[in-house]
Image (tube, rainbow, N blue to C red; front, side, top):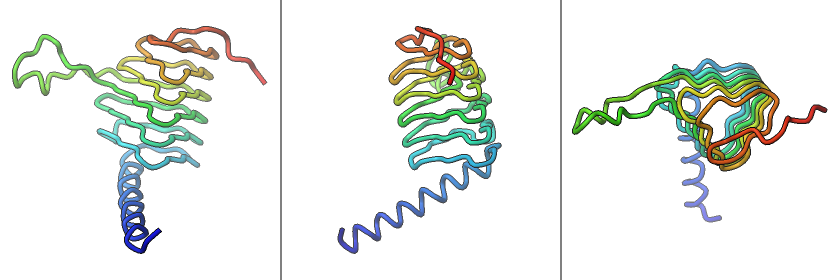
Length: 160
């Protein structure tokens, strides 16, 4: 790696740490939370992360309404949690600001696989695993394994 590459990498790392530091200062964050690079948060004051939450690379938390993520929950790379839809009845310039916000709650001990999309108004029950690439459009029951588009329970999560 050349000197210029190292300088560029160090600058980007510094900027990333500053951005995540800003988010952490605005969000309600529990102890021992770990966040990998690439997190984007809209309206960070609406986000609550419980203790020991892990968020992997390149995730989006769009918090026009509250997002609550319970303790010990893992979110894999490239996931998005969205809390607002646009009002489809709005037209023209009015449509840009015509949002319908609805909160999202992800329980404790959950695991969202890579590329999961969680849509507005959803509650994911405690201990639920959502398979990679799934789209969560309605509430998911606790202690279940859910997959698909839309995500549906396929079995109970085994206890260990």
